Length: 468
Image (spheres, rainbow, N blue to C red):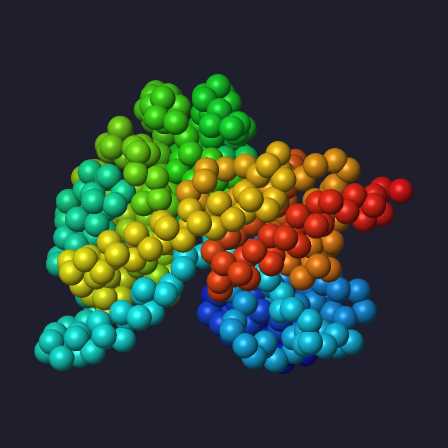
């Protein structure tokens, strides 16, 4: 069991959510690797000087986000990041198990393949060090980013994401999550209503909760946000913005058709609602036209290199119309001061010398291959989403219930994320799970996880246990 104690200073919001957010950050930063056994509820409550009930609520919140999982008689374990290479992390497997069996296949995160980036990264750093410009990259930079980096970003977004962008319109952030925080801060205040798809990504839910936005879910169908439901929500709630992932939606992997996008844009314009378009997966679907190109004057376009080049670069982008750029830059200054210039320099060099295009080509090939693998193993009627996505939406057949299937999958050595983690507000979650296909380190490991999921689907007796 780890001696983990979260740092809660400077975090707004209810205490249990503050603890859950701190847990999420430490998992993301590698402080808590997969398999780490967390302190007991009572032990952590004593360390923090809070009630046991508060810790229980925090752990429950973290489990809903897919970050941790509890095992009766064994404890609570981290499950929210990529499973590391051998050896397995300290504390895994849990007491009573041996490492003789196959390692856990972690399929909870939507994660890019990193082989080409890893091969190139060291060479790029050495070139930067030899260039004589390294000193300019480790000091404070302009809030919106260095001009050369913004120009490279604009070129990249136009080439790979088909976005209307210029160096002036692109502002750099520390990843897409920070870009989203900046975009929201530029147009909304605590208490304001923000609309989102009824199932939306976990990071957006966490951001709304910590910053005090009122996130309201809107109905979705097989084509994405339902226009009539969006119109009704705009009329009733007076939202400041709508947050959407129209290309390879997270978690359903749906691609919104162009006609639907235009309809949503028209409704947003009618009610004066800003569209915040999250397009981190846009590079995977070349024929998907961003909503930003349809309505650049009312769209804050958010993206990053986390799904295309390397998650660890933590380089994100906000493409803003002229009338919103100063507000976005003010938000950047308040939330991060400026994006680190060194990762931006790495990305800019890759964009300029063709390395980035090579990485994307490899990523596309790997994503398509893993989708084909998944669709060859899983029952066809359970698999939903676009065949270019880094994840898929697994809709469970009767009599499976979401929570039972997650437990059965874990028993078989696979970790996935339940639909309830993505549900907005009180929206009922379907009996489905998101499966991250590129998080496993190899296709063989992915195939092992997928076969375990297929076997679990074919074990209906286990599904009946909780409803007998």
